[in-house]
Image 1 (spheres, helix red, strand yellow):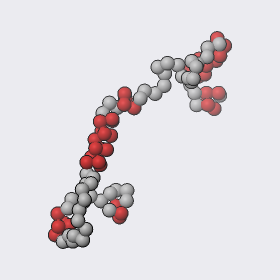
Image 2 (image 1 turned 30 degrees about the horizontal axis):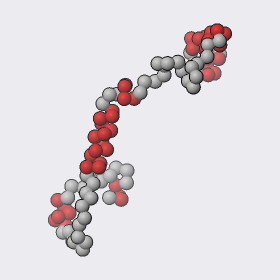
Image 3 (image 1 turned 90 degrees about the vertical axis):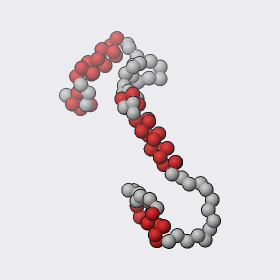
Image 4 (image 1 turned 180 degrees about the vertical axis):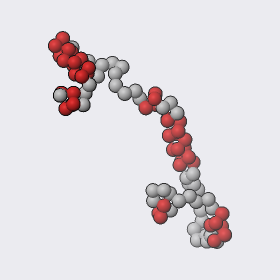
Length: 94
């Protein structure tokens, strides 16, 4: 019944009971033993970091920080040639 109530396997519960009876305590400042627990996401998905850096680079690469003269009008024809993509999250704000 305990395993159903807490969601742990019977094996994990038995191991915990054994560790308590033997006086085994986790390392200082740790809950799990060394090497235990989930691996870093970059270990399980080695391409993730490069993909995130590419996404960030893509966004910052598009920023145009040059100064332009004010009062310039742009024709409808010029606007049609500009490659503007609607943002999926706030497309009406673009």
